[in-house]
Amino acid sequence: MNAPRVINPWIVALAVVIPTFMEVLDTTIANVALRYMAGGLSAPVTDSEWVITSYLAANAIILPISGWLAVRLGRRNYFLLSIALFTLASALCGMAGSLNMLIASRVLQGLAGGGLQPSSQGVLLDAFPPEKQGAAMTLFGIAALLAPVAGPTLGGFITDNYGWRWIFYLNIPVGLLALALCNAVVSDPAYFKEEQAAMRKKGAPFDAAGLCLLAVTMVCWEIALSKGQEWDWLGDPFLRVQTLLLLFVLGLGGLVWRELRITSPLINFRTLADANFRWCCVIIFCAFGALYANTTILPGLLQSLFGYDATTSGLVLSPAGLFAVVILLVVGILLSRGTDARYLMAVGLATMGVGAFWMSRLTLDISPWQVVWPRVVLIIGLSMLFAPLNVAAFLHIPKELRGAAVGLLALLRNEGGSVGTSVAQTLYERREQFHGLRLGENLDSLNPAVNDFLSQAKAGYLQQNGDPAAAGQMALQSLENLRQTQASSLAYFDTFVVFAALSVPLVFLVFLMRRSVAEKGAHVAAE
Image 1 (cartoon, rainbow, N blue to C red):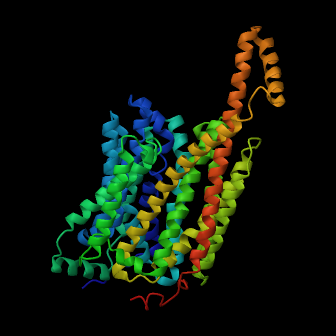
Image 2: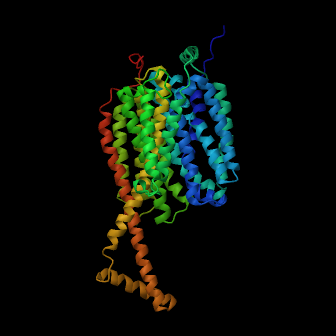
Image 3: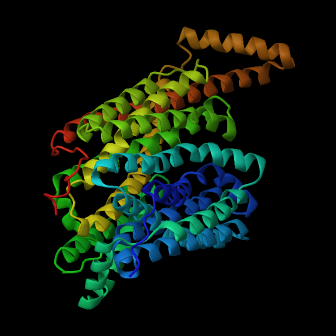
């Protein structure tokens, strides 16, 4: 009998992070091109938001059940199938002739892409011994963290220079390369094959009710997050948001109740019994919420108040990606030398808070580099957090629960991004209204500063056009534009403050976790 082929784990790691990077990149790369998609397909801009919502909803349905699907189909088979379908769906997105076709293709893309992150992370955890899993998670972190950071930059450049369809066509050669590499080097470990054989022998029925509850829960959640602000949240006169939230609560409650009562659950919530994994889920949810909020709000600030185009605003954000790679490599070395992951997580969360607070202290009289450095600090903090968190989360999880745990953590990571984006947009719009009203309280004819501004502005416009009536109207419009600009800037900075404050309580959660050092024998107690 031939001995099993031994492949260098670093070759396996290089192969599996390519599809991970491709899939995570697609969560942010299309955001900057929504207006171009709407114009190219003759659709309203508000309807183009379904391009993002449909992808996230489909992705959220698959992520938590990816472990179950991997055991049923074989992780290698499921991984290769996901890559092939994701590549095909990307081609369909690029060829879409209408918005409905694009949304349908994005649903297929989300369903296929949902299996890429958990499968690649599971392959990495099995390919490396416990003492080297810090390095493995560092490589995974480069893909999972750098992709959303680079997404707006790459998306803006491609859209401005080649058209929005090439955002999707780009996935085709990358997907074919990933498919060939993974087909050559990825295989299922022995324990996984035994688990798969045991499940087939047991003949456990498919949890159709659980899948229906999961679909209702995640679809309602994603639509509510995406459309909540547009529909005025709980003030929606048509009760759409209220209905969605009610269905979400009922669906989630029914899902948890059912999955804890059956022997072969679609989603194994028993993984949350481990304290390290439970707190890591909370931390990753909030941390990626802060990342996606910053990635959404900062380009809006640069484009609306500073006049940057999509490419230029992306370039301002891009230096942070270089620092992310360097810090991830340093953190990987520290983890491999026995540093407790909890200490790195605590420092990372504190650094994230400093970066977000620094961003809140900006003004409208700044250069691009004064935006770059606070962003760099925030991304450095997230880079210090990511790999240690993945080590701490899975260190004490038994191998037979690892697939379920990976899928659940990936789901919460993605959903944190969705919540962060929605919360940031809501905070910004509400605070802009607040500051606009407060600033308007002092803009009256009894304020000497207002009178001086109007008289000087009117004199300047009068010299330009010679029409006293038009000059007066233009002076008033200048004052209104100034009020809107100041209100908008204060709203942006308030949003950064909120996410800076979010990092503080997360630091204390780290100290509720057990010692987390990636070393030989780390899984003995868990197994």
